[in-house]
Length: 254
Image (tube, helix red, strand yellow):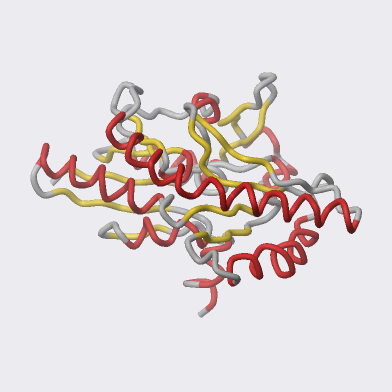
């Protein structure tokens, strides 16, 4: 059987220098994996991650499954040559990089329905900032002419500041008749997504196409955060990196 790994990228296959743990004291052991728009290094792989990637390349096909947009994916310098899932599942890329247009058109319909709610919540978040002096602002993430979700990042990268915003603004708004949206916080990233936007939906779509092409296959899912759990559960096996948010509420909690 052919084997396919649906893998999240950031904090799963690589991470920023500040998250490289003991390897920060031996930077020669790190290798660049992703870059900012200005060409400077964003993230690195550790020796263990490179060993894992080498293992993957021996008989397994890796499919990026990420919240990154198209430009962000292009700034990742790892060997991908199959499908890709970006924008939390809003966009599927064909082998070779072309956009799966029928998939995108279906998602666009759902995002059009969800957009008024996202704009309303963005206004609430920004009004909260103006009222309290908090500098974090809601930003709409758009790609390929389509708005997908909101994200708020603390300007000083103090992730604990996002907790009051989630508790006192975002979750009450969701509870007050907006249950078609979900909130996800991991580190310095607070995202609010329409529930119609889900990596798991895109993984199921690609898996069906792969089975039509190859017959029975084996699928693996790998991710670091709670939001990855749904697409990982759609796969035959799940892989969770040590020390991650998802590990902390699953295998690391035992």
